[in-house]
Length: 247
Length: 112
Image (cartoon, rainbow over all chains, first blue to last red):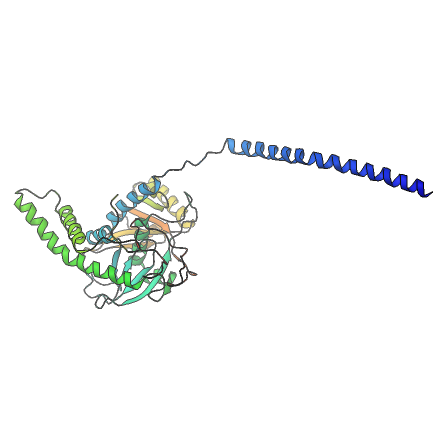
């Protein structure tokens, strides 16, 4: 009786082992087959789909277009400011064209918070963090080109200051921008503004000395301002604001 | 009149262009205008005041656009940026942070 049971158990064990061995042997083949099938599926799926070609010059061209548009919307001073200093100042509170009666003003940086300050004292008031994300992400990014971001802030600020400020996240100075850097930018702005009339007069003198109608006095003036700025301002190191690079 | 839209990775694109005095073209402009507003865009008309000051005017319907306006610019509506950005000094980088064309100040960079 016992002998019979033992023999049956041995036969059952051998049969089970044999079955499992077949399964273990077939496992790699099953995996490889699944992988092959998956590969074929992916190939078929992507065969007709257009592959977005990486274009390393896209952002550069976008910024060039954006600058042309910005220049056509803002006034000469604001455009020159952006080109030479990398930011635009907008007078606050609906003040006059030259900001003579402005109690406060804003500095608009590309993709950075808007900074409110007191022009008379240079005191920083607050940072307004605002963005214009395009969730359609046409080329993978939701961010506008730098000049377009400045233009969007400029349009929103000059059109409806209160609404933009209400939509922004307000922080005290120093939250996200280094106050020292902002003060440095205000100092550069002051120097730049002092140089502009001098540069303008210099451009006129050059044109007069050349004995011809100035072909582009504004351009000469701006070049002169840029030169003066370079002479009076040390080259900026990483982490400091500077002029917008020429494109 | 031109309807322009600011677009990431591209700069502005012309959505529609036409003469508002021509009914068919005006209808096409209105259609494009509504489509952009429905997509959540803001519309602004750049203007110049008599004193020379330039500014923009936000418009909510095509009838608000001055008939002599040369262009209407659409751009994504404003949103408070980087609400969770950690303040300076914590070595944090913000979600809004990006190198600008000027390669300038880093948003959220540690102070010197």
